[in-house]
Length: 161
Image 1 (spheres, one colour):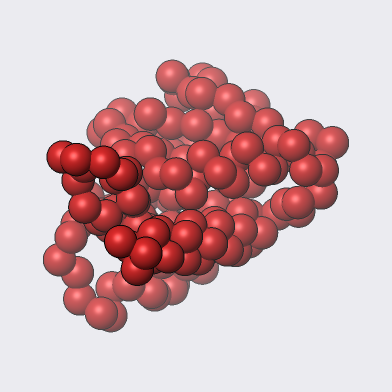
Image 2 (image 1 turned 30 degrees about the vertical axis):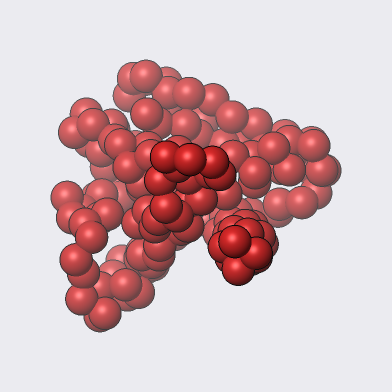
């Protein structure tokens, strides 16, 4: 699934894209790719000139591949985000989901295999709180900020148990 986010009146505006033509007239600050198809990756390459690596969210990566800058200025960051599977009997334990970020020409591209609570939280906050986000770097920083908050809450719950 490919979602693009633009700023409108200081708030994030979300649009789901289902074709290359849908990308033609948008000027996003954030492009979020959840389990992207080969077509969606090609659309990003054609529209923005960004190549999404096939191993972007592989589990086993070397330390040197977690953060690097390409010659063209693309900044690549790979991080793990915590998911608390919930309470109660039979609940899965907390786990990590790998997310790849590419920051290029003031657009943040995020690639991940499933929807994350931290991403939902940021989308909600950025729709409701004007001027929370000014640019693509703000999106990245606010995602990490929300992740720290979410992880702390999850760890508190684990310690309480």
